Amino acid sequence: MKSKVVAILGADWSRLSLAILKELTNLGSKIPLISASATTSLLSNSTEWPNFFRTTFSDSDAILSVLPVLSKLHQAKLGSLSDPPSWAVLYSQEPFGQGGHDTIQGYALSRGEAFQDAGFLSGASLQDLTDLAAKLLSSSTFSKQKPIIFITATGPDTTTVLEALFANGVRGAPFGDWIIGSTEGPASTVHNSSQIEHAAGYYSYLSTQPQSSGGSAQYKAFQKRFQQEFQGQLPTGGFAVSAYDSVVLTAKALKAAVRTSGVGRSTRIGNLRRTLRGLRIQGLGVPLVFPSGLNQPAGFPLDLLMLNAPSNSSDDVARTTLAAQINRQNLYPKYLVGSDLPPNQSI
Image (cartoon, rainbow, N blue to C red; front, side):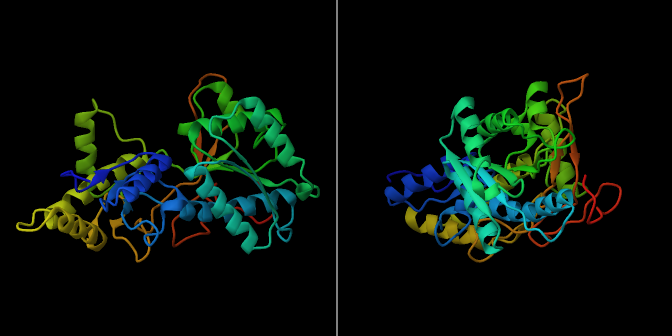
């Protein structure tokens, strides 16, 4: 590539990040791509994708934190902690959905638990997804017990899948006893009272609050600047923090690696990649340190959320936090619903 570009910030979606990385590879470029929100499991490995960096979590880590929680909830509803759960996965056939699917499949098979899936093209119609869900749930794999349903797809597709499941009589608490999980949080999937009704009771791990140590001076300074820029609003999503961290990380790496006199562009790019992996700085959320073999820092705190039942007085999306902070070091968080959830009690 004949260009002065030495780094790319973005992309926001997983499928875009993967497409850009593949194109850069085809062009023989080693320009690093630094993303704040491309969470697909497919981009976790630095051996496979050495030019990719992200300042957010990997879906593989988040999903593997959530699945044991859903399993416990499912067993509690069955009234038995000895019966292994089964898993029904609906996934979009693109990087975000595929990565989540592969993580769940690996988890289930490693534990000897039944697993059945159904993939669809992004943008599939409600009728097609209703038929697909009906076929999946009628599988002989689930003849003895209801499976845990997990949706791994982007926001718009997840909205349609939730409606398709609703059409098949699948409902979470308090209207039904199904356990439903998703890689997408309510902010990306429900936007009116009808959609809330379809999705009520489903679990996700994308908190609407910044994933950060909110009491730090660094974070308070970030909040102040954010309010000045956006007419007094406070940041309401974890990706605001990771976006800021991606800019800070890139800027510090550029200062350390790129402004080197007497070297060519390819050398500066190589220096930048090595510097990005070798920096040791504190981000707003977590230390921006990349463990060996990984393209993301470790230990991102995530909230497990459940969408509340719809309100008659408002179309606002109500959410309630059900679990403590979940991260790579703590895959079995304690429940925070007044007290720890007893083994034989459902929520």
